[in-house]
Image 1 (tube, rainbow, N blue to C red):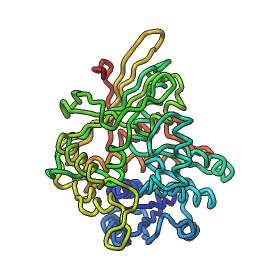
Image 2: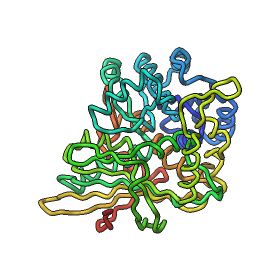
Image 3: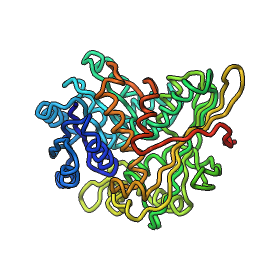
Image 4: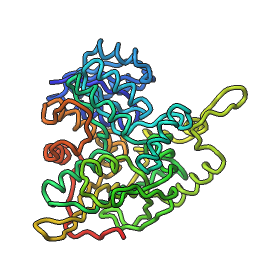
Length: 419
């Protein structure tokens, strides 16, 4: 039995909290901490009567290391599960290393202000050395490997679906289907409809920053940069149908090509409807996607954060979202000298997710894997001192828990490839 501290109380966190409460055979105590204490209290009220896991709540500024350290010392968790904004990753990792507590997150670190001169200097140097132009990567988090080794605890990065489950799909494919993997395409399709002209299915600020950033893919040992949303393909997704998808940069490509250097080419695609793209382009053109502060009526605001306050809260979309998601990986490689193609994917229904935990499928597909990561570390099945990505551990127990935790996966041994 273990104690888990969850930082964050948004859509993804609400799913992970529900799933933690379902597994009261693993988690004896849960503390939910967020800057909005009322949200934490609502989660406790919703789930306490349905679980033996003891739930407590705490108001916290996740960007304050002293506050985080104090809370860790008060609650004494075995694991800190970070499901808030990725701006806080570094502070929370520092606190966990200092207090010798396992750390898990679902997205790589990125700064709140991408034009901050100190960060920008490091970023420009990293881009020149690595050849990619994304505003988010793993390099700074990987630099804490020695700190976690010295502390004797695990930092597990990217424990959502993509990154996360997609990373485990690669490890599973290599273990069971291939001697060598040469090509990987990660496809993220949301076939859901929430009825709004424009809304995002996960954190508005992070979603729009990710989608509007310069894109790239990995091929023959180097990154190939392309303008944002400039490469489009169509794909017929099982149980969803034909959708337009666009090439993006995504952080798991960085870790997967590092840990599987045999991969010759790796790409990431995500589906978008035309209404979404039209709204996003208009907002970008007028400067509403900026992350640099501007002065307005005598005070400084960040345009994209102001926009976020005007947009529908993703955590409220569950009741009105219908349709399914399909997220998976298409592999090309060799087994016993013979070329083969494999497609491993999950289909998740928005309404089924809502009926179970009150959230739409985007939050569900991220929150469930986060709980699985915490469970595997709690049970000592995944263990090691240092900083890791999911593909570095045995994929089998994770894949087994996906099937029993609401995210069953399928294998197509004759998939249509992406050109």
